[in-house]
Image 1 (cartoon, rainbow, N blue to C red):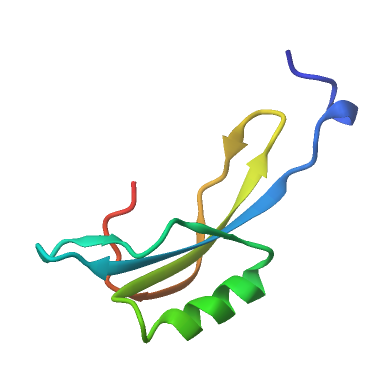
Image 2: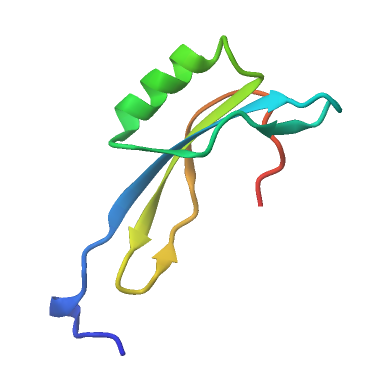
Length: 87
């Protein structure tokens, strides 16, 4: 059951950084588990630092509506190199 508008939890931001490397078979795979970042600036800064170590990096942000369990479409903050198709 959804509460009244005054009871709803305000949207929050989910900022995530993902890195990719080539596996032995040549396919892209995650370099590590997606990392939740504290804010957009730190996500972009770390992505830029890691760009020389990985084949691809992407940092993005999306709004989360916790009371509804919904996510907005992601916004790319930084992208470098090869990124696998994102669904």
